Amino acid sequence: LYFSAQEGILFFYHIKDLQYEMKICADILKPISSLIFCPDYTVLLLVTEQGTVYTYKPAHSGEAVKLLDACSSCFLAADFLTPGNKYCVSVTISGEVQVWFLEDGTCLSKLNLDIEVHV
Image (tube, rainbow, N blue to C red; front, side, top):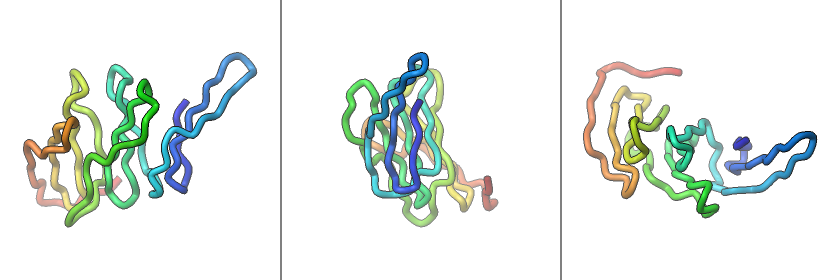
């Protein structure tokens, strides 16, 4: 079980029967608004309230890596484009939908919906 705290800490709870173990996986120092796993569970996207998107690879137990940083408008949500885990799609509050290459954060495509987006 992965979850985040208000302080921007990503936690992992390993639960087996009535026993559990807690581990701190990453601390990004910004409140996390959503966590999204890719279909094969190898990469976890962390979206902050400020609109920054990080990737975390559980198998590597490393730090979260900043992938995207909000520019003129905060990212409201992000998710993986399936099949696979090479690309993600994001939407900003201002209605801009973007497709990103996860390896280096390159923006591959964008579309402006010309409408403000809300959750």
